[in-house]
Length: 59
Image 1 (cartoon, rainbow, N blue to C red):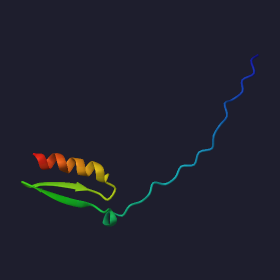
Image 2 (image 1 turned 180 degrees about the vertical axis):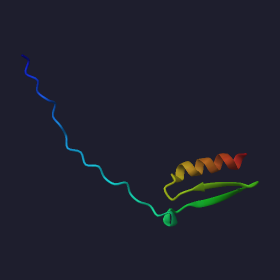
Image 3 (image 1 turned 90 degrees about the vertical axis):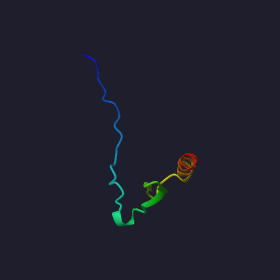
Image 4 (image 1 turned 30 degrees about the vertical axis):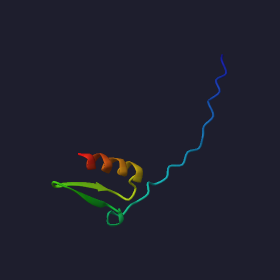
């Protein structure tokens, strides 16, 4: 008979996700004109937002 050794097991802890209050989400809305609006939250990547706004400004 073959000796079978089970693989080692790592202990894992599952954390609760961070809770956010909808009131404190930091959502902002930017009016772009022609009825267009862009909504972003406080976690938006500023460099990415700047690139998006630059592209939209050229249109």
